[in-house]
Length: 186
Image 1 (cartoon, rainbow, N blue to C red):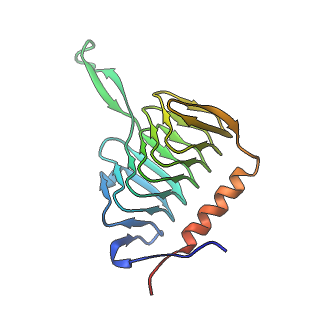
Image 2 (tube, rainbow, N blue to C red):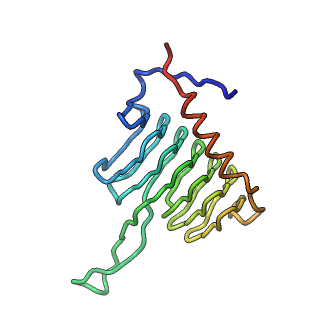
């Protein structure tokens, strides 16, 4: 049996679709943020939907002090083909993803059943495949593609191992149980 985690209901907003957001989090550009439901955003999370569209699947758990910010690339305007501009790219986070505390995410896509450790920096335009694990204190350089079923770690992060075949089952069950056991104090 997993431990029950009790929270003060006055410190969280809860939507009808089961999204629990700490009142100490900063959410910008809500009109561009689409969350499937049953997600938890802990204290001091920064979610930047004001820069580009953010799509989030179900059973996402974002721990304290995480920044979720769309990535960017450089482009040119039609009016001035020599003038460089910054173009923000959509951020897509799939179902059953956990992001541990104090991490900064600027990826383009995070696949289903992925776990990102504490104090990680996922740089611009990274793509993380499904069933992957990014170890604590890792830095993924810009444009890194983490293949599905991979463990990456280090500074810069490199391939370490393949994840077990049971990763998706374990991750789904872990996050469903975490969500069910995250209950208001009575």
